[in-house]
Length: 60
Image 1 (cartoon, helix red, strand yellow):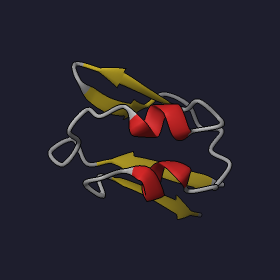
Image 2: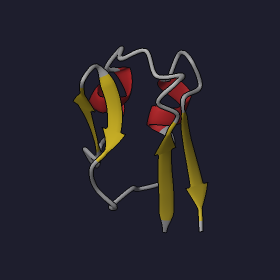
Image 3: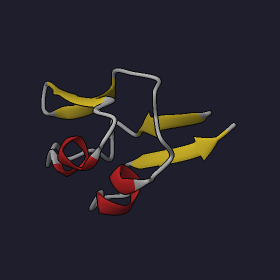
Image 4: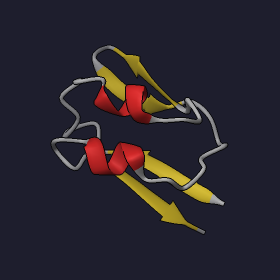
């Protein structure tokens, strides 16, 4: 199981993570990315593409 967190202070709302996530567990709201699902595949695409390192993927 993987846990995805988004640092709201660091998120600049670029939408790169939402486009990169194959599981579609990230959505934009008020120009910030939010985790909306729990089916993370652990691919870390969102973490790697984020220009501000606002996203972290951790395995439990």
